[in-house]
Length: 391
Image 1 (cartoon, rainbow, N blue to C red):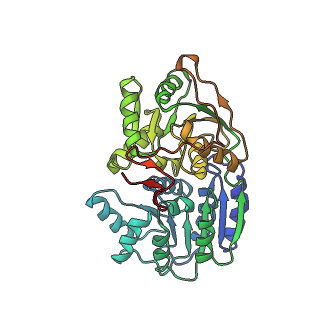
Image 2: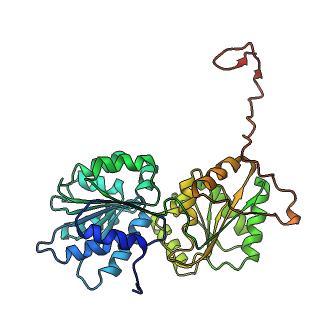
Image 3: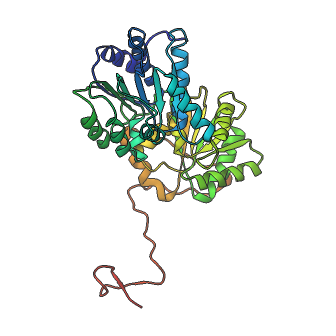
């Protein structure tokens, strides 16, 4: 498969996992985390006398579950180890197919929390012989509100098991989860919360009215073979998709309103380079391992600094190089400053083309002015609770 030497996370994690110790591992995206936990687990499975459902991998999104399954299929090709992805979003036939596959048995199940809970409640999945529990992209699962679901899933598992928690960032909630479900874990930290060195990070100061024109110019004039654009909401994704299509750019929108078959079709086209530009929300910032993404554009500054790391981590994967460009409007400057503080670097602010007019000044220390309801008049003698005088 082209592996010549282990990445740092693989080099540190694999020996510990083979010693059957619990692990909490933090490493930036694109560093080979999946192989770090799957290779030693495969090694242990093929040396097991009695084969049952051995390993449960929990992932936050359908796309990541599918990707992990594909990687396992490659790693396990000559071992006879079987795996199945289990996720929602499909029709009744998909549900029936997943249930039958589980009935026939699989060594490894990769599941999203919601669908797994439904299967557990229906008695479809038997976990009494489980040896390994792996939480991949654990921070993202907590961001999506899956803390209680994970705790509920764990209530079905045998107490005697090895638990591996992998994450790209290490916020306090991850520590809380680790304390709850891991047993004296070994901790591994590889470049926490920093983008890969191969990413050329840049930014433009823009007003909202300048964003589309700048994006069109970058896409039409830049020599980018594969582009991923992040917008803050699916509504913004849809609007930007329509705008760029009218401008003659071959883009596709990726969002939660699409049917699962459409999402899979878009990802296949993107991986095969038949689709060159995708616009999506942060659902694309996790679990999208596509080779050769040359440009990531943050059309909107991400809401949390950790999201920035995940977004730009879609490029420059596996020691390659790529470019990440962020558009910073006047309201998001403090947010972007928090990103720079977290990654410990100042990202260069490029000048707008002269034809686009004047850009905002970068003044992140100044808070945006609050806008008051015009129907209310500020008055020092008004109600203490509101600070306004009734009219």
